[in-house]
Image (cartoon, rainbow, N blue to C red; front, side, top):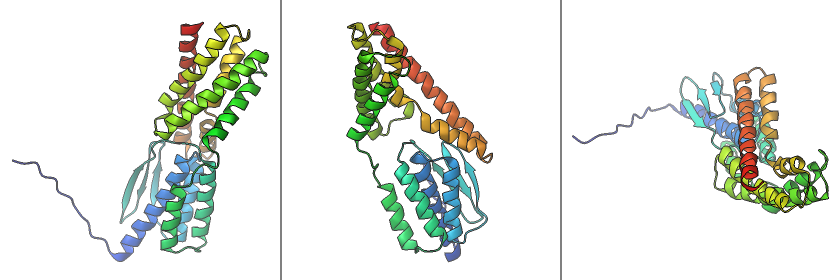
Length: 262
């Protein structure tokens, strides 16, 4: 007997179809915010704005770091969050977009077109700008714990090169942990090689500064924002735990490079 898959299609009234479309658009907007580095509090506000503009009520939600669920009497949705990047320009645009929808200034066609535009909205900073920023951050940070001129130069090169590797991996939508490990190894191997050749005598400052660009500052900030909101306490704890895990991965990358080369 051949296996058979049966699709159950529930017919909706026009009113129910409109409700489903409004929830779908609201979820798309909220997920754009979360996937672009926004807090869960901001994502929920955008979700609420979208539903308010569509005059849709009675929607219950479950917010998690791995999925978002929306439940209504006529439609249920469960959406995975997926990889979380950083594009705060998209977060700001999504928030402004949801405000326009709430004020009733957009038609259904305009909402769908604007959602597609937001999904394709690139970061305002290209790969080379990110490299320069990471390199400068590493070089400057190397001086705070008492680094010398050699550690400044090493951190400048190691952080810039590591950020380049990270941008390539993020373009392949890899998870945060392997991206952090591989990028951290790239930076610390460069730094340890330079230390081995005696280009600096300040090892701790050099190694820490070479990977400072990988510190998960935004997840920590979003985690505390979610915890303070009380409504998203568990998501906030998830974010902080994930950030702590990335710190552990970063420490492992430093330990591996130091063991191999120093």
